[in-house]
Image (cartoon, rainbow, N blue to C red; front, side, top):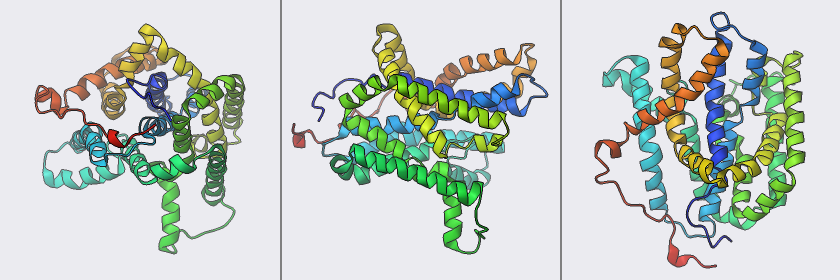
Amino acid sequence: MNSDRKGTFQDLNALFVFGALTVLAIHILGFFIENQQDYPWNGEVEAVLLILLRFGRSLFIFATGMLLFYWYQKREMDWAAFWKKRWRVIVLPYMIWTAVFTGFKLQSMDPRVLAGPFFESLFTGSAFYHLYYIPLYLQLNLLFCLVKPWVERFLSFRVLVVLFVGQIGLYALYQVLFINPLWEIDWTASSLLRFVQHTYVSGQNYVHMYLFTFALGAYAGMNLEKWRMWTWRLQVPACVLAGVTAIWMANDYLSGAVSYYESLNIFRPLYLLYTVAFLASFYSLSRYLGRLPKLGSWLSRMARQNMAIYIVHPLILFLLESYVIFRLDWSTPFIMLAMLVITPPLCIFLYEHTLLSYWTGGKGKPKSTPVYKTEVYKA
């Protein structure tokens, strides 16, 4: 048990920043792939990059599990304080920006027009491009509340292996049911079949598609030194495995063995293997970068802005794509790079100006409340 969990945790800062950049990159690449006629470049390179960078959400889910179980393991929780903090820093900004996106999309301020789409977007995360990760993040926190004692007691390396095999089995099952179906099934025949279909079609919104990744983060958080040692020793084999699986997936697409849209599916066994290999190979580098004096402090500041970048970037990208980039006589790669560089600071600026603490000058901002009961904590 970690009895010295104080201050900040620097291992994941570079991972958070890189994950945020991959989210921006795939949305930028997706736009230019769909608009090759207006912005010609090497479509195959763009497609391969987009396919191989689609692990951002998995990095965040791993990090969420790791941080939750690193900070709160073996502690009796004050769940009211736990959820109050998430209401203030996650749910409330999410509600505000869902309202902004809904009004922007419908070009209306009429509550009768906005109410239905607003609540639908709020529960599904479908506002504008998509904000589905926020409801998913809240599901992960709810799962943490429900299973924390059992995970702390029973999660071992063997259980982790079972979860890995089970997650691959679930992906393989969906593959034979929906992608390359082996049987003709009328999915509208019953409510149960419709539910099974829904768990696949909308699977990215639900925790069952990420259980292994979350559990891997939990295991790493509860066994931090062991995890650091493993990722350091396995760094080279993990790099090789990540490279081999990346080449495999790129070749599948380029050879036509797998369609472009099927290649974008991260819920398949090969992509899970690729994601885990990349995570294991990148972790030691992330830890090293987080410990550097100047770069580490910058990464720490940027990692705290992940919420701002994730929530606001759809609006910034939409405005750039609609009103700015067509005026630039630049090559497509330079436009992509410019969008990638300019979007984060604009996101942070707009996000900060929608926080209640900004308009109230910080007055009435609740003091930080411990989310665990220290009197119960024992070594």
